[in-house]
Image (tube, rainbow, N blue to C red; front, top):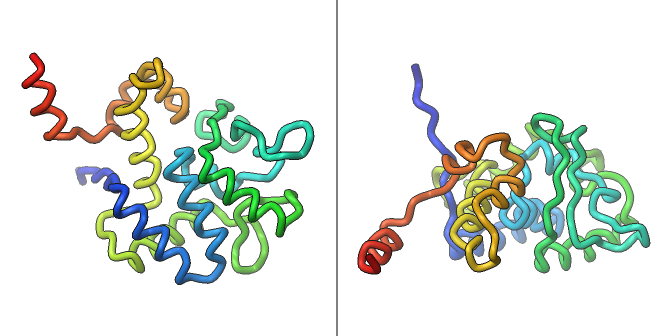
Length: 192
């Protein structure tokens, strides 16, 4: 049986490198939004592909404070809300002005909604352009979950909050996403 290799998590410097690579490809603003969605909100590739503007807008037609993923586009058909990071919100505002805040958020070269497979392929191409080996469409999601788990105590939350943001059925799944940090482990042992 082949062993499944997890997608690599990405450092802030590597994320910056990926964002720079976005500018070298066609549709730089769309590209930036795909990256920011993955790293700052953590949806799956299929959820990114199916994201539509109404899922991001409040009743007044403005960018909301949370991204709403309805059960119709999520794994296990469980709806969830994810707070929108300020960097993502700014990029969405810029893109929305060009699209009229209607239709799919992420469009293909042909002006249609991207498929989950096309989002996966797009990430593979981007990471190759950026020279980031071992990364995949799941790298942003794993990085999001890992960073959220490391910072959740500062927000007064718990690992359960990270689980809900990720849309995992089980806390065990969330724990498998989280990368360990040997430096943090050394600091922790010194505190004992």
